[in-house]
Every structure is written in C-alpha cells, then in structure tokens.
Image 1 (tube, rainbow, N blue to C red):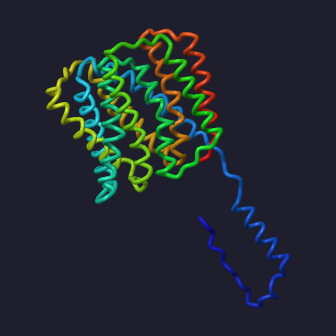
Image 2: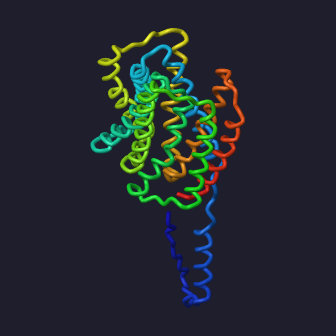
Image 3: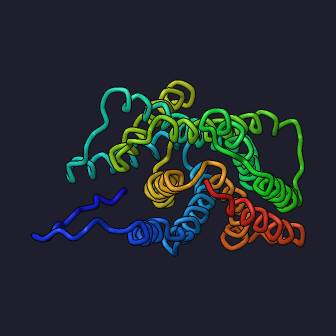
Length: 326
C-alpha cells in the first residue's frame, strides 16, 4: 500500500524548501516505508504445526475407516459430508459463491487435491500398502510439486532449498523404510498411491495458478462437492456403495470430513497463499514421522533407531528448506 502524501500550505507560504530539507524528508519517508520485514509470526508457526498434525492423522483415520467402508465409498461420504457442512456455512453467512470460470477451476483443483489424492490413498492402503509407506510416497510431494511449480508458477528453487529437500527425503526413507517388505501384492496398491502423489502435486500448483480469488468457505465447499461426485461414480458402479454404519465408524467419518478435509486442506491453502509452493510442500516431509508417532501411540507400534534418526534428518531438511523465501 503506497501512502497518499498531502500538502498543507499556510496563508503565508514560506520560500521553497531547500534540497537538504527535501532530502531529509524523503529519507525519513523511505526509512518508514522500507522497514525490515517481520519473520514468520507465532500464528504462522502454529498453522504449520497444526497442518502437519492434522495431515498426519489422516493416514490413521483412513486406515480405520477402511474397516467399515470400501475405499471410494469412504472417500465419497467424507467429501459429501464436509462439502455439505461448508456449503451451509457459506449460505448462512452469505459468502460470495464462485461463478463462471473460477467455479470450473475450483472443481478441477478439488478433484485433483481431494478425490484423486485421498481416494487413491484409500485404494492403495486397502490393497495392502501400509499407512507409513503411503505417507512416505506422498512425502515426495515437495519434489514433484517443486518441479511442476518452476515452469508453471516461475518459482525459484535455490541450492539450500534443494539440499533441504534432499535431506528431508533421505530422512523419510530412513525412518519409514525400517521394517518394510515388498511382494507382488503391493504393486497395484503402490500404483494408486503414486497416482495420489501426482494428484496432490498437480492440484496444489493448479490451485495457486488459477484459484487465487477463491473465497475460502464457499470455494472449499465447491471443491469438496466436486470431489464427492468424482468419487461417487466408482463407489456406485465398482463397489456397490459398500459401507457398514456402526458406532465405531461415525467418529472416524466425522474426523476425516471435518478435520482432515475442512481444517487440513484449509490450512494447506492458507499457507500456500502466504508462501511459495516449494516452501510449504517441505512440511510434508514431517508427515511420515508424525504418522509413525501416532501409530506408536494409538496402535502400539514401536519407533526403532532408524525411525528416530530419520526424524532428526527430515526435520533438519524441512527447517533448511523452510528458510527459503517465496
């Protein structure tokens, strides 16, 4: 925002100011307008921590939800419930509803980020891919999103950021790779998780490129409802809408819909609006580590020395990559 200077002339106008006076006034104005920018505040730090915790919990809640519903059915219910809640909020609060080209762009981004990503993760885990391995593959998102963002968004990736990304990837591989085993049954599941990786990578870059004018509540409602329609088709025709509503299933469904879909994606988009895609996506390197911690606390899985070492390495890489300004 540029100031609008005003000139006040008294009745008896004095002689014009000397150049020294003008220089002093100009220097003072420049010192006022060019103050050192503030670093990330506490609110931004809390948003990053909350995003990592919420996103990590999605792998645990997804695994639990698959006990009661088929993958696409579970995803369709999650998206429909979350989208309906946001739509009601948007209508009651009289938020501006997207129209025209923005509406179409929001639908495309929603299908990529929500439907393609999470439905594919659910299918992969349903086919036997462990949640930790799924988190590891999705943690490659910083690399894939950065590669897409460079030509599309013209973002710069510096050497220190590349080093941070490599360190983070090494930490993820070290931590999640502990105790992994592969067989032929994993191949199809791994393919779906890779598809999820491509979905979120392309979707977030598309979001930042074409959806800058998005109103958060109504925009997310459109994206979730578009994702619900996309997931509903295979849920109906391939799975027969296979779900068993039990007392154990409702808390999982509500968590994935309200916390993972609304809060998690809202935090992601909020961070993307304030930072570069490469910087924000580096937070995904922490997700497998936190997922492993949740699994240890909630599922009784133990953290081995490689997991702890990977946590330290991935954290260092994330901090290094996060120092790069967007």
